[in-house]
Structures are given as C-alpha cells and as structure tokens.
Image (cartoon, helix red, strand yellow):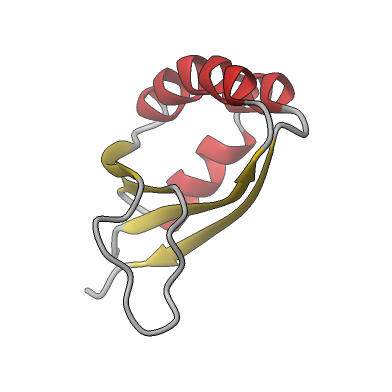
Length: 97
C-alpha cells in the first residue's frame, strides 16, 4: 500500500490568531492519527505559475489513514476553532509505490 500525502494550500489567512489556535490542536490530532509533518510554511521558491502561499505537507501510511485523520473528532474540533479564518485547498494524494 502506498503512502498518502495531505497537502494544504492557504490562499488567504484572515485571522492569524485563529490559525495559531487551530495549529495547536490540529498538529497533535494529526500526529495521533499517524500523520508525520514533512513541511510547512511559505515556499522558498515558486516557478512557472506557482503561488507564494503557505503550504503544509503531511505524510500518512495510507489514503485511508489520511481520510480517518481528517474525519477524526480531534481534528474536527481543530477545524471548529479555525472556522472561517482562512481559505484553504486541501488535497490527499497517494505516493508512487
């Protein structure tokens, strides 16, 4: 089974305080669900039509584990704290096996 990657792109952050509160809950929730934080922050470079926007990359052992992490009560509680403080695009992609 291939690993899966959770990639989040932040198009806009309207309330950095809410994002910080979300991060305090989301990080431990995702790690408890088997997620491994690989990268987060602003891109060092963007090429072609790339956008300079906050990006988060988390690895899971499978797509099912990534999905379960997103749907977990602990992560849903973090989402409730985030509310409408940010516009994001979250994608799950399977790794090449």
